[in-house]
Length: 367
Ligand code: NAD
Figure 1 (tube, rainbow, N blue to C red):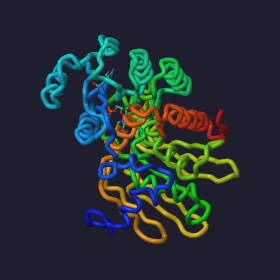
Figure 2: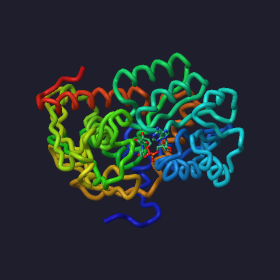
Figure 3: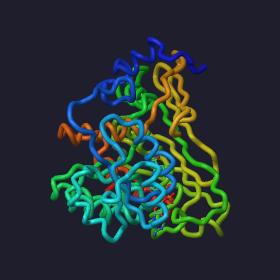
Figure 4: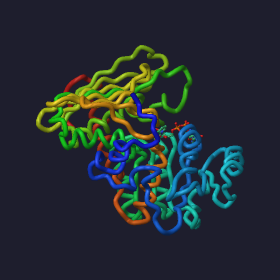
């Protein structure tokens, strides 16, 4: 059962880092985030679709180290609505054509790219060249080569690059990292991760391979790859994958459901699956002396978890606010982010291997 008390001692201990390994106090939001001296950093959201409007802009009303300073949109009516709703000055509103002039705007410290995947590379590189630090949404890009270009462009411009991996800032996932990596209940003996939802019939860029790079694997499976990597604390060396299609007319360009096994050094194998046809959200581990699980596991909120020793109980928090506040602090203090471009690149290497395996079903080593 979920603890409904404002703050149990146990949840405090966990949030305070005792249950979260080496994570610092500033990584959890909001009660424990330390206020740093100096101004809040300005974030400009690029692309005002579902994730920006539903999650990021509201989260930026709760952040302590950054704020919604600007927007970049191709739709003039959205610019008007957002300016009014979030009190954004006209000078901080850009479109995709005049975006590069953001370089002259001292209000904007960080550009957050929240566009279809095929546009991530272009806008990350343009932002870095304009002298801005960048957060880019997942999946980082269409392929490994593009990820490398983005990392190199940010390095060349001496700007920091982070990927929108919000779950690294959620206490349930921080606890999973600790339990798995520190073998608190013994070494892992099995790991299963599933993420998906049933797609209706709406056609969007997500179903166009040229814009999305792929289907459920790129969009939903990436969370299970992340989870397998941060629960084991290791990098997969090989994959084996199969796909299933029940609606080939709808999913005629991208994958619908993908089952894949990630093989780690030493032989441990994680079983993962992603879907645009099934409502899945779970992460389940068995270990030598018990086990732990989260279900639902990958949502923005409402996560539930337990170990064989008892329930995991954490206070509701805002993953996106914690994620953006953490990056703002990293930028301000010139500290490395725990979710840099290299994290996105590692996942893309796994994804490319899975697509290679799916093509002909065999075991494929990562390259
Ligand atoms: P969306 O379709 O709701 O929004 C996309 C935005 O891009 C829209 O504002 C649209 O107008 C704009 N756009 C510009 N050029 C476009 C073009 N040529 N075609 C289509 N749209 C165009 O998508 P979303 O759900 O907001 O996803 C955006 C990004 O955020 C994706 O990379 C997605 O994976 C990521 N995302 C991350 C999470 C998370 O939990 N981290 C959740 C949802 C989405």
